[in-house]
Length: 289
Ligand code: ADP
Image 1 (tube, rainbow, N blue to C red):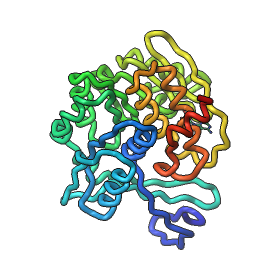
Image 2: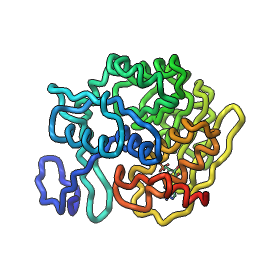
Image 3: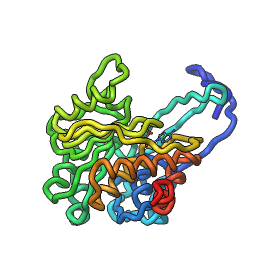
């Protein structure tokens, strides 16, 4: 945190430093594990302090880390986030480090684990060709493929055709569908475009407005849960982890999105990302069951 953003070449005194675990993959894995699923992570970290603490955290949360490889040659992926105290704006530099080194061979090394899985959930903080390979392997093994296209990147028609559920937020959906000036029905418009590009279903997360589901049966909005939000960072990760758990349990897509809306809503009521992920009991209480 700093009183303002520094100019190029300038050094300023900051207010405070917080070091926390993160990364979309780790947050989503922890969200799914807290909701009771058996979760295994396929990832790369560096053989450094951040890598050791990331593996330790995942292990404590019950996430299988036998396919989290530690590299001597790269640092653990990290992001430096400067938050302006006055305007609450941020500037972020992500150094992907070891994430860039996750290869199709790492995916193949986890083949048995993938074959035993109901759902393979992925994000775009790792190399695209590895994501595409994993989608193909998952498909072959009969696992559902859920892709959270964040941060947004251009996706090939081949990859989209292997995705069962694509889960962009509104910004990512507009970028992926190449909608220039998003209007009031931008989410619907983007979902229509992305569905036509070949994925099985598109779920656009709409922040406090819940989610939009689009599939062969048509389009419908899934109502949000009203909560007092204090920190929405990681809400998308909570949503993706929970959605995947519900799909793995055989729930229909709309029901799975309602469950994900509930889990994500709870995550906004407390600070942090991984730390804010809810338990199964908490989601059950909010849903009234
Ligand atoms: P991201 O965090 O990736 O930008 P969203 O902002 O769309 O994603 O939020 C993801 C999900 O979190 C939403 O679909 C919704 O279920 C939940 N959510 C986010 N903000 C709120 C809020 N203020 N109140 C209730 N639920 C929320």
